[in-house]
Amino acid sequence: MSDAGVAIGVDVGGTKVLGAVVDRDGCVLEEHRVYSPAGWAELRGAIVGVVDELRVRVPEVRALGVGAAGMVDREGVIHYSPNVLGFRKAPVRADLEAATDLAVTVDNDANVAAYAEVKLGVARGATDALVITLGTGIGGGVIVDGRVLRGAHGFAAEVGHFQVDPDGPLCACGERGHWEAMASGSALGRMGREAATAGDAPSVLAAAGGAVEEVAGVHVSAAAHARAPDALAIVDRYSYNVAIGLVGLANIFDPSLIAIAGGLVKDGELFLGPIRTHFLGHIEGADYRPAPEIVTAAFGERAGVVGAALLALDARR
Amino acid sequence: MSDAGVAIGVDVGGTKVLGAVVDRDGCVLEEHRVYSPAGWAELRGAIVGVVDELRVRVPEVRALGVGAAGMVDREGVIHYSPNVLGFRKAPVRADLEAATDLAVTVDNDANVAAYAEVKLGVARGATDALVITLGTGIGGGVIVDGRVLRGAHGFAAEVGHFQVDPDGPLCACGERGHWEAMASGSALGRMGREAATAGDAPSVLAAAGGAVEEVAGVHVSAAAHARAPDALAIVDRYSYNVAIGLVGLANIFDPSLIAIAGGLVKDGELFLGPIRTHFLGHIEGADYRPAPEIVTAAFGERAGVVGAALLALDARR
Image (cartoon, rainbow over all chains, first blue to last red; front, side):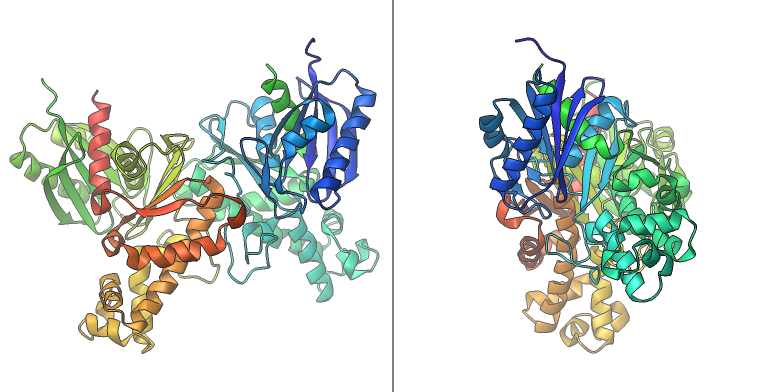
């Protein structure tokens, strides 16, 4: 059996299952997505459906990599995920190998995003770097001494889950004021809805068609791109929340580079500018150290599918 | 010149300079301590004084290891320390080699404590472990995949400096509500003084001889050992502060073991018991993962001097 040189990468999050056929250069050849259902049986069905669709388009695929928003052990079992209800001791690798007859690799979604950036992206050559995914939750992939940080059991780099504010909003994991609850993509939407409810965000509300309950992060971004002051104020507060967590992680890991992945990447400097400013205002010993660069991940929204596919291709060597 | 098999380890903190002659088995043969003066010239003089005193007692010493509470780069320059004013771009290794004519190794105090625990202590054999020093500040030594985490520039593992509470007390680094400001040994003393000032800690105040401004962590500990409810309440709140930071670090690093070092170690289970209880109540996915053990560091207050000496001995091989 010859190595086709392509693999399917699947990124499983709380909102969507995104699949792609990816080659060794990180190019996305085909792509397919569906919404994430609840429960492992339903989720497994959704993943297999995405894989089957992609295999119709590219039949020579032999390997499947899965990046999932959860605590993945070294056997490919997902023990827990705050945002994906189907991931409760789910035997993801075993079940998907049985269902697809492909060689399956499973890792945390942010770990695979970091793998893509180290192999082919903005972190190429960095010995110590962070890849932070701001999505439904916050995922972290951490490169230490050139390798992906896994921890004693494979559960490391749950970087969204440290307390930033004891009076902050409730996190999906059940704790209060975790960084994820303050700075994920979902948090941006919540901040927009809160401001709209208080009457402080007329332009954001207008962008959402006037319905407070419809306000999401994209409406904050849209109004901010149009330079509406109410939206820019939310962007600034949200960027502060992102920065204050990055400061803690930078003090802990001393990275040379921090790459931001996730849905906000498409807004580029709208968020990155204020994030950098707040970050430099709070990093420990700013006058006495080289500060890490903060950049957008090279693969943007597709870091997860590309990294998962690359991991699957490398696992087959 | 034969290898004497012993080295001097010096632990430089905000309060004291502790030096010891240590052999390859981690045994402390001689010890000497002085208070920490301000300014690098004065501090250098104090360190050299401690080294000279120990060399009178054990003349065959050829190597000196320094563990210092600050950001130490790979050349032995200390760029910054929130708690030791003398450490501002101080060329520690170069100056001490010139002053002592010994081979000098310099690293962060918590890194050297972690080195002692990995080589000879409670973390021996662990691939992923944390050694957390609760002293004037909070120091962290992090073992990732069997090695000490250094970061891109040598400044990693500043684990006391992430925000836990935006309304918390001011940290020595200038930021508000960092974990260090909430959970260092100094923070325990402050909590005792605050409770005494409010009239809520009569037994702690009595232990300090009735003078509020004299209340320190040792008085809280003393009254708590005598089971005074007011002191036990402070111990519980302080232990919660310690635990909530450990939870974040455990979610980030997934260690199999967390060793606590610093002055509180001598109080043993008085603090470790409530720390463990609060920790297990807040770690992410507690029902779905193996939780790390929380234990006292094997070398207790001497982890720093032992680790610094072991690092110096190993550097000479």
